[in-house]
Image (cartoon, rainbow, N blue to C red; front, side, top):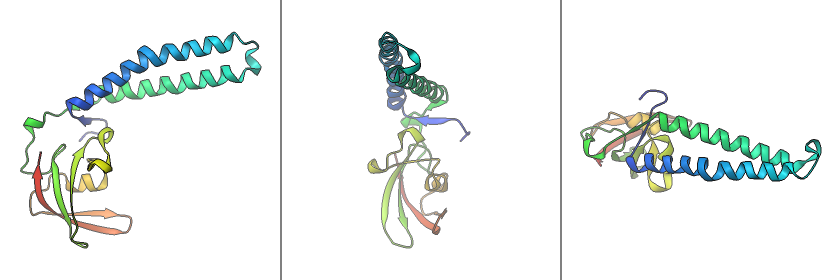
Length: 158
């Protein structure tokens, strides 16, 4: 993986584009209106409402720039072309922690899609990096703050 490339599904890419469109078409004009309304309320030097509106606009513009960058660096991965002979982005991998004998299944996703509650971990996370390229039966040794964790790959699916 290159530093800036963000691997996403088509659905996530579309959601990011919709979010960007909403920010530009709805949030940006609303921010401008809030600044105009605050400006009408008098002296700008002592107008906290104006300062707050300008700050909110700055944060919105920063979010827009960040989202534009993410979309520009996004690479859509087709789930039909995923090789399940080894752990790659968007595969679901069932692993067993060799110390605790606990078995869990994770899907490796891009950073924007990571959600541990849904069993989705970032391919850029320590566990994600450690599992990438592994095949069924192989043991991944992952450096964690409390030592080395060992996981055996049990199954790889889409």
